[in-house]
Amino acid sequence: MATGGGKTKVMSLVLAWSYFHKLYEPESRLARNFLIIAPNIIVLDRIYKDFAGFKIFNEDPVLPVNGYQGRNWQDDFQLTLHKQDEVHSSQSVGNIFLTNIQRVYADRDVPPSVDDENTMDYFLGKRPTGGTTDSKIDLGAIVRDVDELMIINDEAHHFGE
Image (cartoon, rainbow, N blue to C red; front, side, top):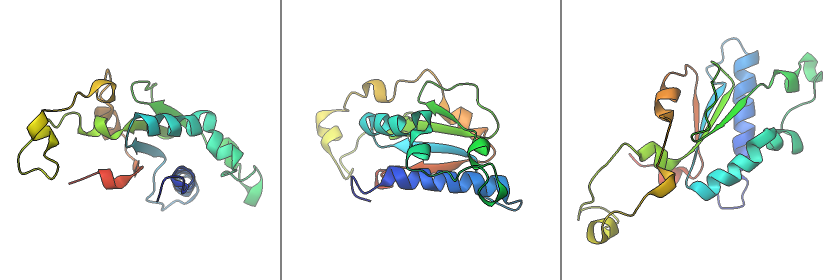
């Protein structure tokens, strides 16, 4: 989807659908834990702003009111938002882990090559990474131990291999 096309809204709808489907449907193969990958720090901060306090779920609204179809939708929607290094103790379900794509690639130190599609790093040297990859917490180790996990990649065309 293009910028401004509503990707964050779609992410919130998919996330809520998956959460409730897994909660209410006994045979559901969906998840109640989510890893949202942003393409950069600017988008990460924007997504965090929308998801903080679950504003996006309540203001649009995404969640049905309690009592609709005999269920307590808003009371049952129990999630904890974790951003980058601000990972709180996570419960087995109900986690949203928010990070940027550079953290996903952080442990892959592949030297630039003249055969790369973009040869700028090869000729000019690797760009400094700064705060996008510096990490106090190994988010990968945390999410690997989560039984049910849906990965939502904002701007997935950045993800290769």
